[in-house]
Image (cartoon, rainbow, N blue to C red):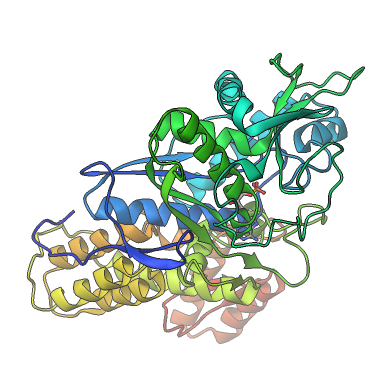
Length: 486
Ligand code: AMP
Ligand code: ZN
């Protein structure tokens, strides 16, 4: 952080109060954040990845504010059913059966793929605890709250949501009569009650099961986040994040468990929610249904790369929208985001040889930095922050070192890697392209030579060759790009 800047107070939208509130760290100089992570039964789609780009941006802003960040994204490798409530099949076991692999192998494979996607999107490293490593703690938590808050049914141990005060206040849903939920679990007292422990049905064996006071089985999905949040960050911690769908079931249930735990643990606050602030990103939507993991070619980051887009173009696309707005996906939108990133990388290229210089109070940059800081402090206003970054890149007649330092400073929040990316990095060859980069460069060199000798017939022939291979030669492109894949 640049201490000489009086940065505006950070204000964030808290889903609990539905208001923008000043952020004050619970532990001086620190910020502790928990982000609900993926269920690793399949690849992540780019909608899922929006949730982590948002969480990462939040983390970067907290660091920019000078706070030491502890950030957890858990890995759900057990317990998640095909519905967020207690209905359906176990996602892990279902995929394991489908692929003829063990549930453990499935979990490791998709966790690695997820972590590779995070890295490609320049999400900073975070702690990634796995649910299966915390089963003992989950059982202990269940034992602690069972007497006062739970009851046993044939299929498991259930949390009775009427035993805590103000259940569902996060969702603001009418849950008293279970509106909106389908009651299919036998023995459940209230439709909103949820499993703390699911027993393995008699006569069956599951790949992932453990002994517990309630019989062999596996923990309910909501329990892991309560347990890992408390273990790794301590209650209360600062911020809990997730996608907006979690505001309806998963997070109200986590809060219910946290209240019960705090009450049973002698903690004074009966309404302790575990985290002080709950934040939710809105959805990335795609009209044709390609976001769904059940569709054949679903929208994964790798598909974008296969089609020739750098992953950071997708990060740019996310940052261009406010995290609380729905973002509609389109290939044209991604193309525009890539072009914007290219422009920025090219402007940053001119600062490649400069050494960063202190920039405090610089007359040209101070107002731009003020705009940037006001934007991010206002509930992570990345769309405006991006325009401030462009303003900074456009400043003329200034010391390159100062300019570089300002841009680096802003990019520490936006995470676009402007000084690492090159034009070549952004020119990804689609998997189905029939020509490789060396051939393209070679053809362009031959064409340049032909033009220098005023042999326009030869130059045009080379151009046609490239067009046939799907390459558009971009003479006079204001961006200075030599060619693109058409
Ligand atoms: P899951 O693996 O289903 O638990 O989802 C991982 C994260 O992605 C959760 O925080 C979800 O709320 C979030 N999420 C799911 N779909 C979308 C979407 N289309 N856009 C943004 N976030 C999403
Ligand atoms: Zn969670």
